[in-house]
Length: 369
Image (cartoon, rainbow, N blue to C red; front, side, top):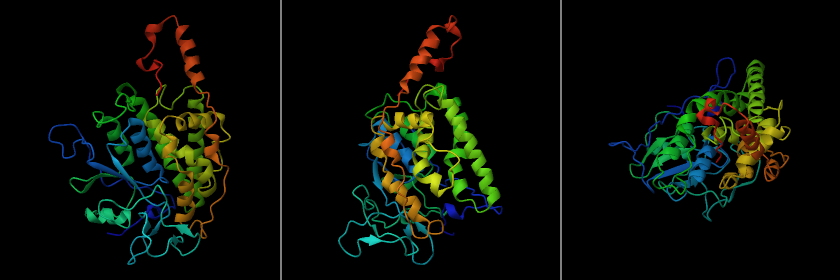
């Protein structure tokens, strides 16, 4: 088995080809489940910088699971994980007073960067130095050491490292312990609409930014940027007429879109060459991001400093000296009023003037998070 990162997943034609997550177990209330929902049994390993891990932090906050599922935040800048190979990856914080308290990038340049932040922690389960070690402790055979990891502290194994499935579990399986069990981020009557938008949002936006940034040929980049630009415009058009991406209720699909849009201007426009569009230049998408950012608990999951440090400092092949652009302070823009409630008002007016109310579909009701 060869340790690898996303930068190694490239087709012969130079296109980035992300492989599927390897750990796909499920927490379930079903009798006999290996992984039943329990308070204090499960632990999330996350990076504030990583959009896939950020999904789980938002879902955990909105459901009120902070006292149910513990977390450890890793350091943002990838470092060498094993002196016997060249793999770089996520590291745990070093809060000890011994040794150097600063590091460079994995090529020995850039920085100096701290070895810990107030929000980052040492590994509380194995005292591992890297996320790679967590995978090695459970005899992983895949070799791609990603976050998020949903870990079972009782059985000492990984439940899942697939973020889209972890957020579904957080939404549906822990209501008896959650502070906000009434919050349903995947309503049964919206699943079809959610699946429809998730398919193109993942391919062309969530993964699309990486397909642009990690492309190794002009043709591969041109294909990816064309698809990304079309998807950006598609999201903008949809959100110009409804409050949320799958309808008029906030869902997991919005979380999936938000974490990419949040990083778009500060990172992807520059680092991944997605400069055909900008969220700040789209009133619709900017206000959509404001709407979500201002939901209770969401802003606390955003750490733009660590986001930028991770991207600009973890890949010396892309940014040799790990210079971090100052950027437009996009997060500051998210604190202004969003005005998205007017979409609900307009919808109610249309609904009340409709003489044939019986023809309205069930998901036309006015419900927001």
